[in-house]
Amino acid sequence: MRIMYVLLLILIFLEVEIKNIWIDIILILIILVNFIIIGKKEKEKKKQMLRNFIEEEKEIKLEKEVEIIYNKTKENIKLKFNNYKEMLAKTQQNFLAKSTELEYMNDLLQKKVSNLSTLDAIGKSVVSELNLEKIIDIILDSCLVITRVEKIALYLWDNEELKQKATRGEFLFNELCKNEKNIKLLEKVKNSKKYYFLAKKLKIEKEEILIAPLISKNKELGVLFLLKNIENRKFDKNEVQLIGAITRHLSIAINNSIMYNVLSDKEKIEKEISLAADIQKGLLPKPVGEIENFNITEYFKPAKIIGGDFYDYFVSDENEFGILIGDVSGKGMPAAMLMTLLRSIWKTLLSYEKYPGKILTRLNQIIYSDITNDMFATVFYSLYNMEEKILYYSNAGHNPIIYYNSSTGKIEEKNIRGAAIGFIKDYKYKMDKIKLSKGDILIYYTDGITEAKNENNELFGKKRLLEILFENRTETPEIIKEKIIKEIQRHEEKQNQADDITLIVAKIK
Image (tube, rainbow, N blue to C red):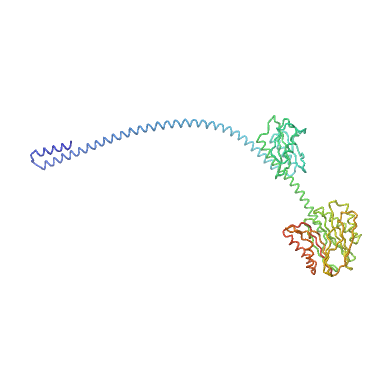
């Protein structure tokens, strides 16, 4: 339309007489501009109408979408709310159930706390108590209160025999009961069958019996029988656990009491042994060293606190010197007592007899009736006349003396056979003698020397003893003794001394 309108104007322009061309041009331009402006406005108007249309369509679409979303959200909220109501109802039911359960658990907890308090009180009472009878009274009385049982019986092992120590309630021992279903064992142990057999002897027609073994450090100390009337109520799980805890307290307390008594007895015995050892050391003769025409030295070391070895010296007014050495069978107190007895009798006999053979004969006669069949003593006794240089000797089953003859340069054993003291009642011991000279050496010893063992269980032996003597024959008795002891210690190394060691070395000047 605009183009046609413009062409019309141009035609009019061409037909009309041109009076003033510039005015016409200006008019034409104005008209053109006007048309252009009008055209733009119409274009903008159409654009705006299009925009409005688009906006209206968008709003309509958005409203529909919002409505759809709203409806969906509403349905979801309604569904979730219903689910929440159901869940809340279930939660409330669970809460009520849990509340009831918690009440029950709280009751149980209070009972357990009460039981623990009671157990703690029992523990403190029995831990501080070492008297066995008082411990048993505390435990049994506590059991009656805590477990509400009608009867309790306590048995303890004594020399492999089960002995009744205490009871609460009246027990009737009948023939073995036939109804065994009401017998329960708290814990299976080595002697379960014995406990079960003993339980069957109790009258349990209307009673349930619980067998609770008493164990401490894997050792069975005894057993506790607890009886409850089944018409009232049987043992429940908590009571069984409680009884188990009580028996553990009881077992520890009983074991502590037993150990305390054992240690007390042991302490008394050790004191007695220590005293006896001091007495034994006090009975040993003082070192003689050098007298008249010979030197003498000694070494004594018991394997235990109290030894079975012994030795003694005797110097007479007639210029005679006696040497006694012996070994009592066994160790410890019995051996020490026999040793002391032998030494005392020997010293007494020196006032009545002189020569070794007669002294050993009388010693055996006197002591024979005072020692048991399993005890005996080996004894070697010699008497040296320092003026005549003659050694008289007799032997009662002991090691012979080792004699180094300086004149011949030979070593030999000097022995005369004789039974050990205490073997034969009226045994008569013989006597022999040696003529000694300057440089001669005598060695008296017990079997703790020759039987000393090393880690390979090899004996020190007599051969080594003779070799040491020969190699050191020119040395003093003190050096010879030290050499022997040093070699024995080297041989034994880290091994414990198994037997008493006694050594006497004498050398004629």
